[in-house]
Length: 181
Image (cartoon, rainbow, N blue to C red; front, side, top):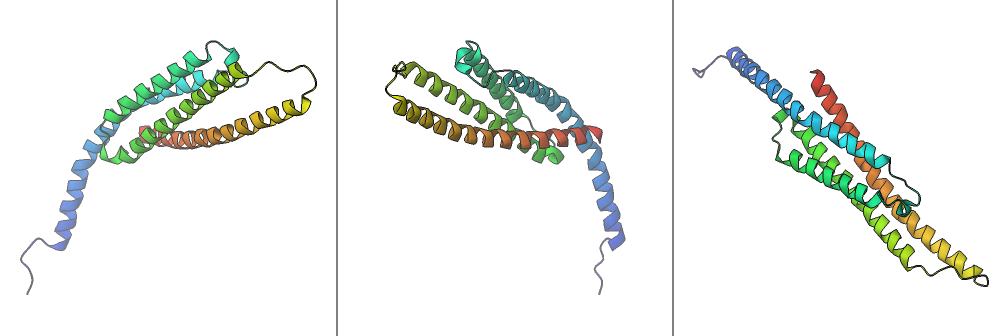
C-alpha cells in the first residue's frame, strides 16, 4: 500500500524551487556584506603598510615608533570591533570567522612587538655604562644573553606573524573569489 503523498520527482522539484528562491537572497546578502567588509580589509592593509614602514633595528632610537605602533594597534582593534558586530550571510560565515581570527592574530602580533619594544627600552635604560677594559668576558656573556632572549622573542613573534599573514591572505583570496561570483 502506497502512501498518498507527493510523488518522489515532485519532491525534488519543490526542493529545487525552494533552493532557487533562496539563492538570490544569499547573493544580495553576500554583495552587501562585501560592500561592508572590503573597505575594512583595505583599511587593515593600510595599517599593515604603515607598520611595515617602522624600523626593525634600534627602534628605540625612533621617537615616533611607540606612538605609531600604538596607533596601529588601536586602529586594528577598532576594525576588529566593526567586524565583530557584523552579521555575515550564511555562505560567508566561515570567511568572516577567519577574518576575525586573522585580525585577532594581527593585534596579538603588534602587541607582542610593543611589549618587546618596551622591554628593550627598559633594559637599555637600566643597563650600566660599559666598563672600560678588563671585563671583556662579562661583556661577552651579557651580549650572548641579550641575543639569546631576543632570538627567542623574535621566533615567537615570527610564528605569530606567519599565522596572521597566512590566515589573512586566505581570507583576502576568499573575499576576492566572492566578489567575482
